[in-house]
Every structure is written in structure tokens, then in C-alpha cells.
Image 1: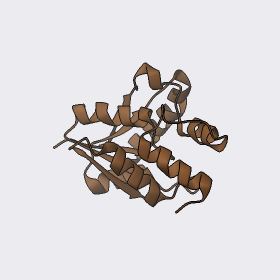
Image 2: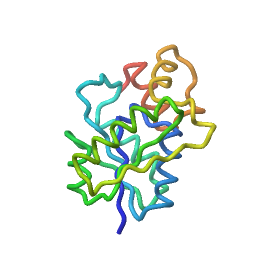
Image 3: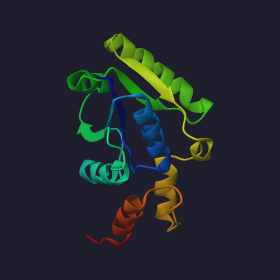
Image 4: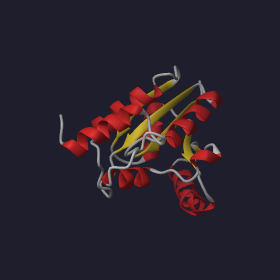
Length: 161
């Protein structure tokens, strides 16, 4: 079975992320979408909240699982038996950073391949930072994220539990 890992902070998950997962799920037997605990980033949502949003957003895909990890992606990939790491490339500007990461990951684990997938062109401008910024100013983000994310953002904004 060919299992791949799609790591990210997913803070929050967007339709661009979902598009990448759908593409990967067509190519591989199993896709493990894994929420990174990145101490260098200040996230709007907890790991648990992001995991719930991903579960809800990806429930239509039978060969997709969601988990989280703390540490190096290559170590988590090896632990779950993944043969590759999925990375999304929206624009040329993403390539340099992703290329460096792919080379480092190959150095750390030569058996692990990095697979670059491009989202549909309608999602190339979309990222989680833009969504968080729009939400901060009470903009409607429902064209960019699943309803579960809209609901979680509304709770964060109003302070509801």
C-alpha cells in the first residue's frame, strides 16, 4: 500500500488544502493529513480544533486519515510507514522554500520522496494567513473555507464556546 503524508499547520484548512488532498487521494492508497505542532507559529486554532476541522472537511474521502505530530515530518512519516510527503505549490515563490525542505528531508531520510502537487488555479492565491486576516476584519470567508471553518471562526470572533 502506498501511503503518503500531507503535513501542515492548516490554521485553518482552506479549499486549496482540500484540493491538494483530493488530488493526492486519487494518486495514492492512503493520505494521512497531519497537523504540525509548530512552536515557531502562533496559531489561531489549537491542534485539536484544526484536527476536528480537517476531519469534518475531508470526511468524503475514504482513503484519508487525519492525525497530528510533534517533531520532524520525516520521523513521523517513517513512523506511519509513508513513502512520500505531499507538498502544495501555489506559485513560483513557494518553490524555493519547498525545494530546500525537500532536499533536507531527502538527506534525513533517503527513502522518502517529496511529491509536489499544484492546486486548481482558482486556489493559487489562497492561504491560511489571508483567511485569518479577512476574518479579523469580519469579512465573509465562506467562499474560501468549508462551513465548519466558518463556524469555528465565528466562535473565535464572538468568544462563544
